[in-house]
Image (cartoon, rainbow, N blue to C red; front, top):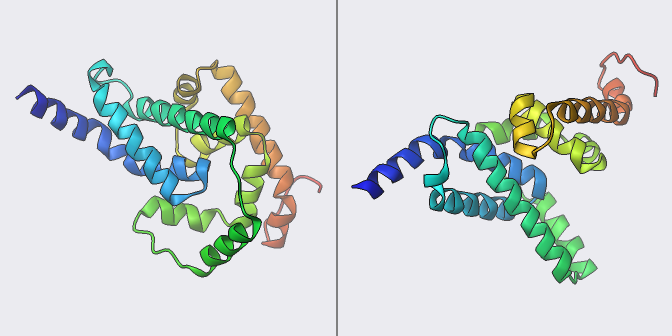
Length: 189
C-alpha cells in the first residue's frame, strides 16, 4: 500500500510538469528525441528519490534541477567521448527535417513555435548560456527570480543581472528583426 501511495503522490505532484520539462529540454537540446529521453530519465530519477522530496515545496523547481543535472551530465559525457560526424549525413538530415511538418499536440509547444521563429531561436542561441537559461526560465517558462536562483544555485541578484543582460543582448540582436515586422523600437541598431 505504501508503494501505491507513493506512486499516487508522485503522479499528483510531478506529472503535471511534464510539458514544462519537455519544453525546457527541447530548448536546451534542440532535438525532440533527446528531449523525450531526458524527461523520461528525469522522471525515473525523481520517482527513485521521491522520498527525499519535501511535499508542499516547489516540485516544478525540484524536477527542473534534476533535468538540468541530467542535461549537464549528458554534455559532459559527449565532451569527453567526442563525436565523429559525417558532414553530408548532417546536411541530408537537416534537409529532411526542414521538409517534415510536425503536428504538435502540446499547447505550449505550439505557442513556442509561433512565438519563436528561426531568427529568434538563433538570437537566443547566440547569447551566452548563462543568460539564455535565465531568459528561458523567466520569460518562457514563467519562473520567478527566487525559483530560478534556487534552481541555478546562485544569488537572486545574479539572476536579475543575467536576465537584464540577456534581455539587453536579445534586444540588440533582434532590433532589425522587430523593425522589419513593424514594431517601433527605442534603441539604435
